[in-house]
Length: 136
Image (spheres, rainbow, N blue to C red):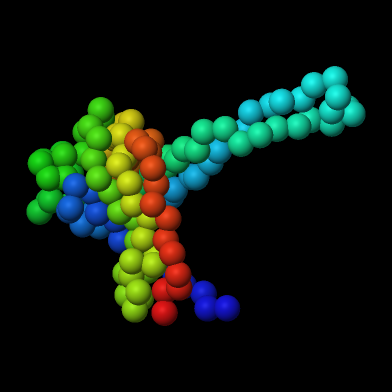
């Protein structure tokens, strides 16, 4: 089984490549409890609504203001986004998650002896398209 590293990951927001240092996607389902007196003392459930959220972290680049349009990363905006696991792979599309994101908040972090970073927290707005196939 081939392993991959994060060095070739890539994120685009509103068709603009963002120089991320990290991104995280959380894909979930809201399980609905249907336990009743016939459950024999064990909890039972059924699948509810699917959803997704996550965050990305990037270094503030003086040549690319993340709040300009594009990519227009501001709380309340809904933007198209792609999250690529391995941009150097032969079949890049096979390692791509995509969907619309609702920007929940942006955090700017400045350290005197370091780089200026920002974090964007988002919630998926609609369907998340999963990767298919292999990366090679």
